[in-house]
Image 1 (tube, rainbow, N blue to C red):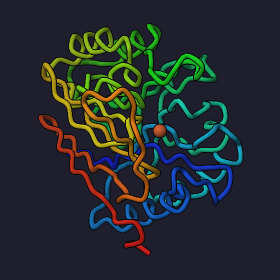
Image 2 (image 1 turned 60 degrees about the vertical axis):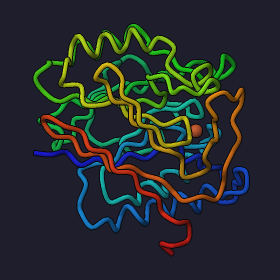
Image 3 (image 1 turned 60 degrees about the horizontal axis):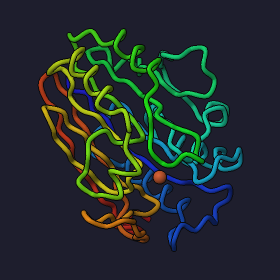
Length: 271
Ligand SMILES: [Fe+2]
């Protein structure tokens, strides 16, 4: 059976309804995203949010995030982004059926999605956060690499969800500052264990859509409903674009393929 997933990311909800991110109200734009997903003309199986649920970790922000995202009429799974804190996420957000891969860790979100619709698949959420003072790149701990290696059978299609991308984008600023730094180690494990069952790595963080394919590995990224980043190939920085359409991806997994369809909602069109 195909597995139908809606991939969203980087909602950057604030502690009240007024947070303005470079001219865009993240609460209003998250509400529009939820409204549009709820009226899709088909029924997806689940939603994965690849992190930066809130703009700054704060119980009030997570309470608002739960208020809007629990309006999604589907199970919603979360990964942790560099703007998130896991204990607050666990306290405020609803996590559907899952199996923690680091059961002793209170501040890491590394788990296998075990929703009944995923029975024929192996879906994993990993947590690459480093202390914010170190930067906005990610590192996947050896413990997580080993935990995934122990879970991957090689007999079912595999998908991995991570806040941080794992393939170079060709944009200097992004590649230097925003990726998983030990990505070669993670990719080697995934290729060794899953082989051609690895259907894709799905990521956020870049605030822009992304399709990369290297050595048989797909990295598909979805942009942020809050604001987008520019990032030119040779630039040493990125700028912000606010007020554009609101993005989400529809990912279909099958036993032998992954389809990614990107959607943009003109802001205000759904109200
Ligand atoms: Fe973000």
